Amino acid sequence: MQTLNQCLMRDDFRVGADLDAWFARGGGEGLAKALDDPAAIIAEIAQADLRGMGGAGFPAHRKWAPVAAAPDGDKYVICNGNEDEPGTFKDRFLLEHTPHQVIEGALIAALATRANHVVLYVNPHQSVSLAVAREAVKQWSGHAQVAAIEKWIGAPLSLGVVPSSGLYIGGEETAVIASVEGGFPFPRRKPPFPAEHGVHGAPTIVNNIETLAHVPGILRHGAQWYRDLGLGNAAGTKLYSLSGDVLRPGLYELPMGTTLETLVFQHGAGMLQGKEFKAVFTGGPSNTLLTKRDLDVALDFDSVRQRRSRLGTGAMIVVSEGTSIVRKVADYVSFFAQGSCGQCPPCKGGTFQMMRLLNRLDTGRGVPADLEALENLCSVLPGSGRCGLIDGAVTVVESSINQFREEYEALLMA
Image (cartoon, rainbow, N blue to C red; front, side):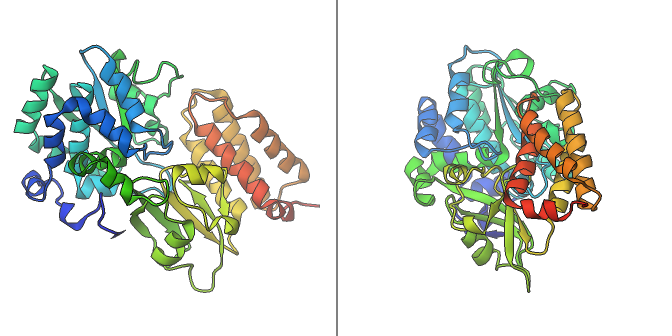
């Protein structure tokens, strides 16, 4: 794992489940400052411009503020560590190597919103992450800072670990809530939003593991420190999961706003020998592909959106010339088809039909009508599901056709 040791992955922060070691290295200082003035926490988070690192880049303070404003009673902070999308492997690193940073961030969120339940929601397929999270949570039991939070909120604070379903769809925030309630992770329509009606109807924050891991540093060093870590108008750092046809794949913590070219050719050491850069699946396989024309793009939420793509989780799956885009897209749509919960027939049926058509095209059995049918599905399916799964599948298919139509047409039978 490669890092600039700036914020999340500092070598001296990698203490696993050892809470004493975490405090010996400066852990707890962010929470201590938060306890001095709990009412100022959300304003500090807003000034830092902390975004949600799980995909959407939604400002964290806008999730927290309505929960803080809700009347006292049961409120939840959920640390979302379901992480199951291909090419994304950042949250498991944080849970395994610096879980107390995540927990401290969640406790600060609970303090800011007067929440009395904190839940670490962890993918059970990541057995090491789950075991470390459980041990780390156990060590906070009875700690003086937890007692101080309880005094502020006027209620006992529960801190626990809930294994997720292990399903891809289980990471969507309303599906997370359904799982924490003990049910199947069926996504729900919004509104109401979790901040209004979450776990058992209580106001709920669902934040990604990486998002919460940034919080202690912001409270410890201040919003301006965090903003200064980024490049251009971007704030903070980002964990980029780099994989695919590069010489040095891995997890890189870099300033938010680092260019795609810098990530791939400097930190990733460039392409495999004899290979040329062709494209990259950004934020996992559910976004618009970026090509050679986009190597100069700054990898932050706003800049990538201007290229009609999304930064997503920060996953960058690099593809070289000579690799079939159709084959890659067929594999990813198969993943989406298998991951669909089946609650929305257009999603379940639509992903299956796209998978079937892509496999026909990839194996040279496709005809022009198959490509036309694929394009028709891309026009009618968006917005037909309760979550973003079908939209993500359509986005990657539509983008691949737009960017690499000649590859599709070359596979068609006469």
